[in-house]
Image (cartoon, rainbow, N blue to C red; front, side, top):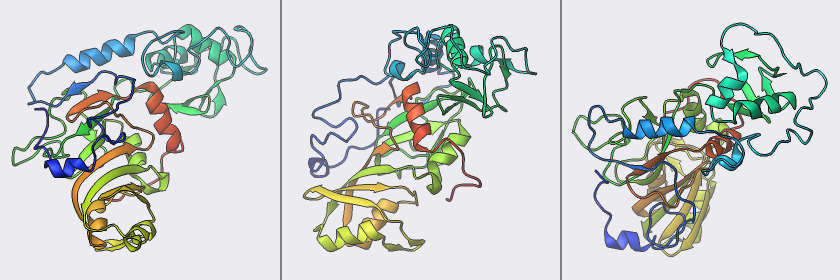
Length: 344
């Protein structure tokens, strides 16, 4: 299944050649997406994408490693660590600490997580660039993926090897649920069966654009929780005149059945088109906001989730996030999980 029903030609006209819309005809980014797949009818035992993912994770992350995430692999480039010689280390960093309990050696765990090769991880430890539970790491230290918090250059690194993070360009006509009693296509169709992932937030059936799917519950909670300020950006084609009063109301907040919306960044880059940036995620919020100011939405596309964009990802296509994208997303969320459950 490539995707759901195509939008009417008139609806697409407002988006033509707009650089922000994933998969839209017109100029595209020069960088190809990594490990792209396509939604299709789901089959039991589908594993091809998972095998490809496993091979990519096993690839070395040392100097010169290819891929869009290579440049962001901390410590993967050059023989220097933290600006000093390869063998240098700051005071207080142990050269060979004994094991500190259960778990696996830190350099092995970080290499498996795609940070860098074991040798380069050791250089980073000697340079004091890695911390475990807030304390400078030691060579030979052991960590437990489900217990310890590991930071590289201040960024928290996910250690669980079974965590996956997919970016999907959801077409119209596909529901954002794991299953559908009416038998409609879902966002999980065509994705690897294992490990099982879930959509982070939702796009309604008629909406299109970027959707994050993962089995990383902590990251999902932070993306959805308003306190982290994770922005979602939309391009919206509307019928009706987008006047100054409508723009002011959308920016300052409009009263909906579930309360006043938070202030939003709203602009009208061309006639009949709105660009809306939100940091909250109520049910059908964009459509209801537009309706509250007398505008009818004819097409809605999510073009960004926090720092995540992909101009080349076509409708129904998906891929796994790169390490660089994961780090950028973690950084945008503040690096710590809020307490409590997200709303909705």
